[in-house]
Amino acid sequence: MAVRQIIEFGDETLRKRAREVEKIDDRIATLVEDMKETMALANGVGLAAPQVGVLRRVVVVELEGVGVVELINPVIKKTSGHQEDIEGCLSYPGEYGITSRPMNVTVEALNLEGKKVKYSVSGLSARAVCHEVDHLDGKLFIDCVLRMLEPDELKGDKKE
Ligand code: ZN
Image: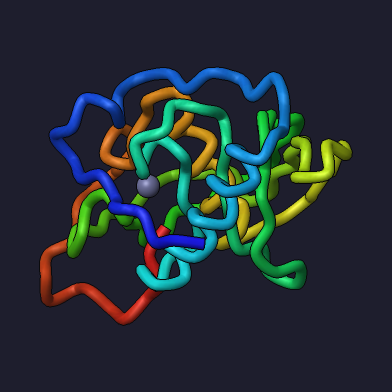
């Protein structure tokens, strides 16, 4: 395992659409392990492959009550409700805003074993899943932010 460098805003890689994973091979397995390590070190709750410069549809995310999971070719199947809360991004260090997201999300994906997995999550985990899946389509949290926070409004939250 190795920690990878997180790409920051301004890099056009973050605006590109990531490609589907066709075969879950050793490269994807290494990517997932590296992303988990990189996310943990950065104290994040989610990380998408484009953030480490890899344009593949791979996400790692920490889900409440589940732990850190990999989502390969994730698709959001269902959303409901609405929440507005503080969101940040490892590619935007130190910047936070209030975003509007669904309260509940059901996501389907493949895991590293190639098995179909399905998670229904809410609250922070739902925000994290939406945020990371958006990254795969070149969409960033600043695109759906309602209001950026001033530095004195920040609290010690984990970053998405
Ligand atoms: Zn992000």
